[in-house]
Length: 165
Image (cartoon, rainbow, N blue to C red; front, side):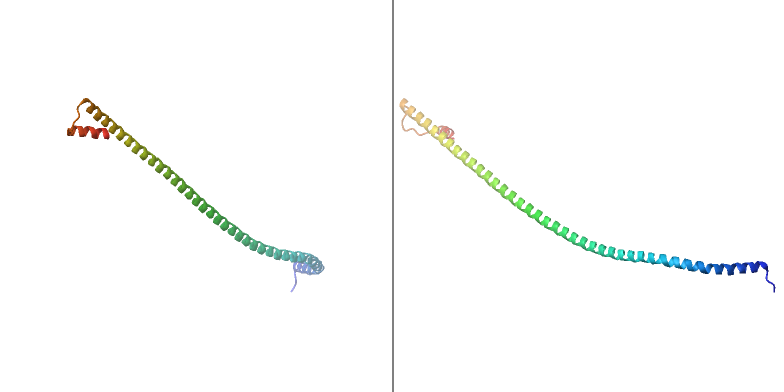
């Protein structure tokens, strides 16, 4: 069997490449080892940083919950105070309104009472005036000589009733 030159050249190239690759692979290994050590430090630092960030995130979420609870408590207290103020305001307004209504009612009752008194006085005055005029007419009639014990007529009673009313 004869080997072709082409195959021999290819085989020689592969052997040469393998021999040349051995020192290059050592260089590449050393280079990668050296850089992987520095990269490993960065990776470790990033892992530590990640742990710290997770702790901070946990603390922040815990504090956020505390803040939410505090805000909810403040809102609840504010609402209670608001309701108490509104209730007190309503109560004060109702009391003030009731006092004003009572005062107005007393004023109206006083005015009505005064009006009734003035009506009574006017009625008494009218009745006394009518009685005076009747007495005057009666006296004038006696002076003229109409007198005597004459029974009053029904027309006379109507006149007297009209004058009295």
